[in-house]
Amino acid sequence: NNTITAVKSIKKQHLVEVRSMANPPAVVKLALESICLLLGENASDWKSIRAVIMRENFINSIVSNFSTEDITDDVREKMKSRYLSNPDYNFEKVNRASMACGPMVKWAIAQVE
Image (cartoon, rainbow, N blue to C red; front, side, top):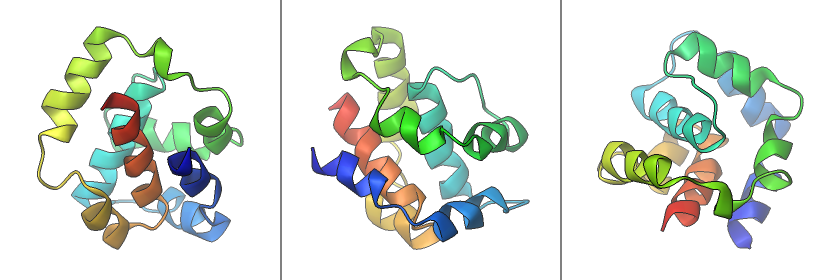
């Protein structure tokens, strides 16, 4: 799965960049909010999102421990209504704001579609 490869190849410096944002661009928050939703994390404000992405195993929880089959219909619906229907929620836009979040969005979209 090439979206997994994309997430695996996120450079540490790009992740550090996002982790250190005090006030991230809206698309970055949007992207990470959706990742938290998929991972079953109840994180909607930046402080709690940041706590999730600060974890050592954050990338691993996407590339190794995630199973598409575990996505509930409820989460799938939320992904579609909140994120996939948002014109700002796409690889190009998000990647321009953060090279760490772009591949994650690509991965997230692939999980739901």
